[in-house]
Image 1 (tube, one colour):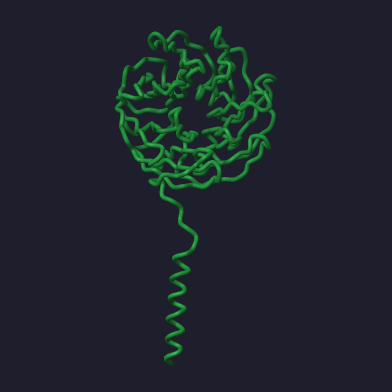
Image 2 (tube, rainbow, N blue to C red):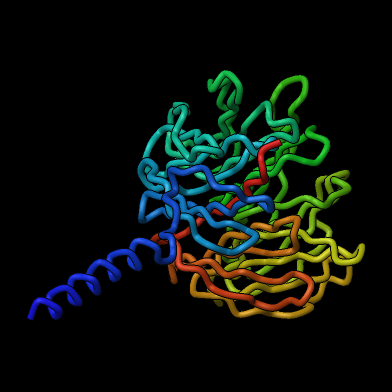
Length: 334
């Protein structure tokens, strides 16, 4: 009897030791994470969180708690911070990229949608959809500088590569506002685009803008020298965010199509479809990494699709928080 008891005790101790030495648990999102290829951040609007994904491994490190209804997220150019818009509050949140802790809050006076830094990271522009305006924020001072009226229900934002202009899509009036940023921020032109213009992206040369017409199932091509639409490219159903990728010197548009749950790859020069990739329900946000991946938020599937840009192939699907909307690439801190 004594030998049986001793044996049982030994087995119990061994089991405890093996359990303690098993595979390590995922690090919490509050821990600093070494990510040499950067991270992906998704704003999960129905979960009040931001999911953090390592680009090198496509491993989810966890989530960061936010305010009410995080809509979009953007990283500062130096990779040291990321900012989150809150559709359910009148403020922005600022997080430290190393610790993933909130370090500041900036009152912009209204519910906020999209956000975009200038190339130097000194100014932040935020669309205030319910107020028909854009907020201008001093990044270092964490202070609202001014509010500039634009068209009805602005949403998408893009600063031109030279930092001279801000483009703003006005979803409720089918236009895009062109704002001069120097010497003062003001509207200098309004361009009719298409039905419910949602997001906008600019060519690397800064001479052409591409606008997704969410209810027009098309992408408008805009000449920024003349502020005129030069044509339309057919897209998937309900095109949302657009990513621009240069493949061996040839530009490609990667358009997330919310209504069809796929990404359309488009040749903007020939203005024709290259291929279509099925992602998930409610394909919405897009973010490209220097390592050659495209990440797409699937807002109705609560997931993130990972695509190899060169192979034009979906690699995997990663679960994230409820209703992922905006997405951003967070580079390693400089």
